[in-house]
Structure formats: C-alpha cells, structure tokens
Length: 116
Image (tube, rainbow, N blue to C red; front, side):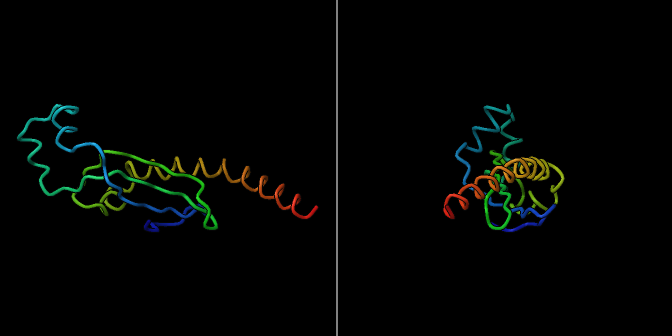
C-alpha cells in the first residue's frame, strides 16, 4: 500500500488491486457501450481501488471500489482526488472515527485484565 496523505491525524493509504470483473464485459454488457466506444479505452488501467485508513499503524477502515478505469493508477488519487477517491477517504475517516473509541475501550479493558 502506498501512503498518500494524513488527514485529521489519520493516515490514508491506497492500492490498486486486480479487478475480477472483465473490462470488456463491464463496458459493453453492463454499461451498454458500443464496440467503438470501448476501443477508445485501449491502454487504460483497469483495477479495483482499495483505500485504507490507519492511525498508529492500526487499520481502522478499508474502502473498496471496483471497475476503475483510468489513464494511470496515480490519476485516480491525484487528478481525480476530489471524486471517488475523496469520497472513499471521507467515508473511511468517518468509519475510523467511530472505530477508534471502541478500540481504545477494548484495549484499556485488556490492559486492566492483564494488570489484575
């Protein structure tokens, strides 16, 4: 995973993972593109986006988005940073903010049990 940035104390990581859905099938059958339109995608990157939110090295949220088609993987989190990537980061940070107090409480309870 590649570290992208830190927001509100949470570290944002990104990785382009293998997309299981067939690119041609997706655009022609699901999106009803013409063969000509589909051929315009030649040379593009086809992947599933994985955004991970961490704090102190602990994973607090994993966000996934399939069927991503961009000129480059980097374009997903740079040029289009405020699109799907931004939504994934925002949702992941919200999820992390909810998970963190629960994790802290569980960790305290474990430490107290160890100290007893």
